[in-house]
Image (tube, rainbow, N blue to C red; front, top):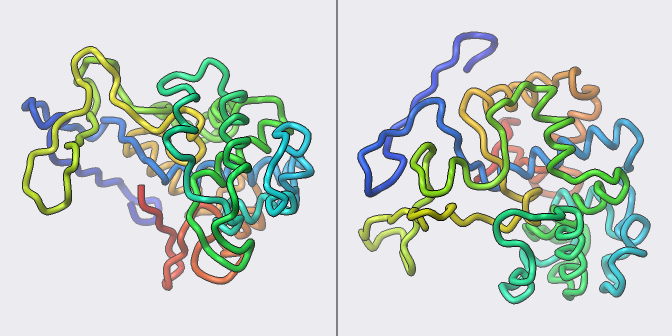
Length: 279
């Protein structure tokens, strides 16, 4: 889509490598880490409304909730978490994740706080502010700070303050579609698969099971799905600095790398000023 002109949506391929069911332009896609820009946008709205500050620290917001944490993380701010400058490792190990809900969280806030507690117990892997270290854990901790301040889950706030205002009616969390059905594209995976070995990509846990995904606690780092039209609406809000959501000053803060490098808050800023992220 260019300007306010008509939209062109193109898709190709199959919902599943074992069935001849084509994808459609209305299918819901799992956007993975593009979710990070959505989490940053949500937090920016709460900063503008005064619920949070970019300078709020982990110690100041979560210190009494997480118990023991590495002292290095106490002064880390929201701004550093969302720009991957906190020093936090990329992820929790499998053992730490194993105790958290694997499919549907019964208490998303408690699960996220448990993840944050485990993450903040790890030693830093980089220097705060000085080093860029891409961290899913950093986005979970930032969302836990938002939840602590508001009392609402990240999922509820995403629906209320991002999906609904922008009319993103297809947006949701986790693998799209229903367990055992091919009503949406299904994730493909082959154990020990490499990019060039030529083996087919098999669908994951199709028979009566929901396709695996990031655990629910990792939602703020990468669990949103939506269709292409809704994604265009979301991207248009960023492109046009939509004052329906927040002021242009808040949008610019979101799109400006706060430290050296090209990573802003949930977006990589390309040399031509364009915004990009893998997913």
